[in-house]
Image (cartoon, rainbow, N blue to C red; front, side, top):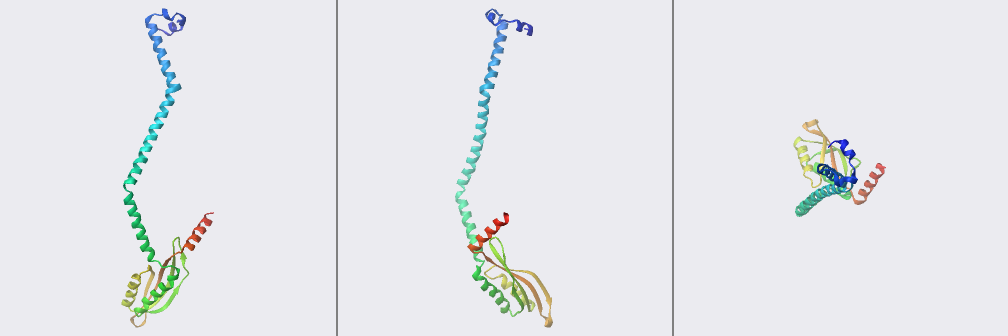
Amino acid sequence: MTLDELNKLDLKTAADWPMPTKLVALGLLFVLIVAAGWWFDWRSGMETLEASRQKETELRQVFTSKKTQAINLDAYKQQLADIEQAFGALLKQLPNKQGMDALITDVNQAGLGRGLQFDLFKPEAETPSEFYAETPILVKVTGGYHDIASFVSDVSKLSRIVTLHEISLAPAKDGVLNMDAVVKTYRYLDEEELIANKQAGKEQKK
């Protein structure tokens, strides 16, 4: 059937159309109904279905993640307890503000106990950090090589954290050595100092 023949068809006489024409007309009508149904109804339904499928996938992933966390909850609790215990052990190695004088005395006594002569023992101003404060001590001692080495070893074995920096050795008279170094001691900040640090950080950001 040609396009010209289709244009000449009269719907009023549809009952008299030849069978092939009726079949073609019914086919076109079916296609139009399907297309209209897709455009006005099914399309939005398919979009909703696809969105629901994506949501289902996301929920499954969240469920799997939560399930894994729930299964490993006891392990996570144990890890947290281990971390808190380790942090507590480290914190005990840092004195508070009141304990700093005793720590500085311990460093001094470690040198005197090895027979060293202190030519300089000068604590500098402390430098606060986020959770702790660092106090450098300028040290200059005179003594034998083995005595100086023992002093350094004794300092490293103190119950508090003490570190040596910028070590310099030079020969002196009578076969002894001069050692210049910066001994750094550390203390943890108390609650008021932590609050003050946070406040200062916020003001700097502003």
